[in-house]
Length: 431
Figure (cartoon, rainbow, N blue to C red):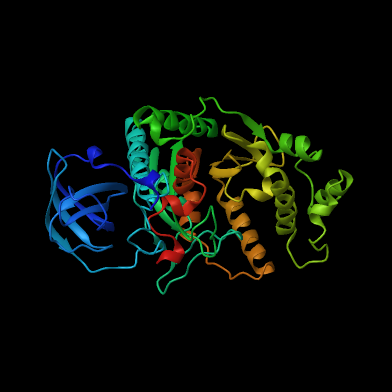
């Protein structure tokens, strides 16, 4: 262990303590005679902090042992109990998985901050009179959108989002609701993804999407005011945060003008005219893909080219997305061909995705059926449609807006973490 990661016993309060021995250094035979017999330096890990303790006694100690001791006011150690046998303190094992002493902040510390953030989120929603809901994790019909790979079980599907059930609550008279839900999406693994993750989702009836954008800004300010500033490595930018349209970003970064009427082939032609045809060179023009899926592939190939450029440390709301990319959003009244959809980005990372919710049942069914065609054309398995949700739309869903935020990424941003595994107790490869 490097000395820079050690903390002296002076910083450890006297009293009853529990920890794990990492190293035992016995008195060297050549050391001064004034040092007592059976003198040892003990390097002990307590939670995620290292302490060097001085111990004089006969108790056998070895690296990896659990230890209980009394620490006197003068720093003397009285060992009360030891447990366990000598173990190999491997970095990937559970003994050090969450609290590697050389890494600051430790994963254990980040998980403590995560708990404070989740507490603060709940506190903010309660202060604003939202009702916290709990909808099922297992459903008979998940979202049919082609980008999702739901996890199927013998009894149904694990949810990719609690969206459909929460909208049914809106139709039933609830007006301001939120949920912290466990969600599941097969095949999503990486620095920003885990197949099981936490989603914060909230809805307001009879409110514009802009109000939910304000919700995020106010919630973050609430967290920055109630959680110790040293837990957030960077100062959180004060709202209001920039609002930009998808069209403005395409014009600025690619010199492509989107008008909302482009087909997939027309979008490809615009990319070629603007000098970006190399970005699409491996996307075949001869394909069995549906028109909307072909458009989506071309769009995101172009989008990914500049995604890291427009969002720095200040969060940015990106709104007015092309209609083929918003299966559950209503049409944008002021811009034909675009949808009332907004995404929040920071440091090149998508944090939240919100809609002015589609309430037209027949249009929603048409879009779902198009999603199923997209899945088939891409070779993905088909999905049953959620008929109860569609019936709810037929009976009348109030004009509503909804927002979904990835809690794990949200914690990553606030804490300055680079990998999603740093803010999760366990990732897919650790279970």
